[in-house]
Amino acid sequence: MADTDRIALVTGANKGIGLEIARQFAQSGVLVIIGARDPVRAEAARDDLTAQGLKAQSLRLDLTDQATIATAVETIHAGYGRLDILVNNAGIVDAADGPPSTSSAEAARRIMDTNFVGTLAVTQAMLPLLRQAPAARIVNLSSSLGSLSVNGDSTSPYYSARLIGYNASKAAVNMLTVQLAQELGDTPIVVNSVSPGFVKTDLTGHAGFMTPEEGAKMPVRYALLGEDAVSGRFVEPNGETPW
Image (tube, rainbow, N blue to C red; front, side):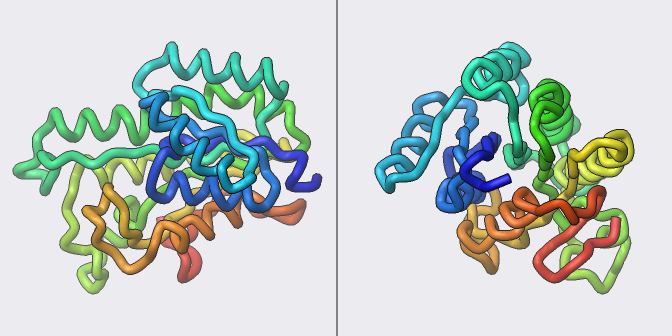
């Protein structure tokens, strides 16, 4: 299938990595739908792309609001009848998160509700549309912080990054990738977890080693994998990430 035939939804795409993923999709000819909690910001991101001559739409999509998810499904179904690519990019951090002994339990609950439960809810809702595509792709934005192996490795540069809510939410997203890839193993739908790397965004406090443009490249590449695509992987710019 030519990229010009594909329809992609990117959650949390009004800024940061999400916006750059949307931009790179559109630059490759994919019609991209920008999902964001704030419809004004979603429209502003859409206008940013369309001003460059790129194909983009926008819609309100709040991962913690089932009504907005249902409306997004209806809108995509009415407009296109299918969805070729779902990038589960939206996620949050919380200042009250921290090590298990001191993290706010409410902060951990908020993070899990958006990063994992919300991602699960969107994926479940979009699956009927993804099944209508010839060979759909799901990319779950994960993090090395979601790796149990990395968290347990005292030599890892991420070993001291003890954020029980955030890290656990990304580990849960990885479980979604593993189980969904297995469940859809007899279909052409491919599901992978992609850790974009340490990217300078609002979520990281603009710390990091990569620009959003650089961080978007791997999620876009995995979303556009061809017929030889492998499902159920956890990857980062340096290669495979241990679960």
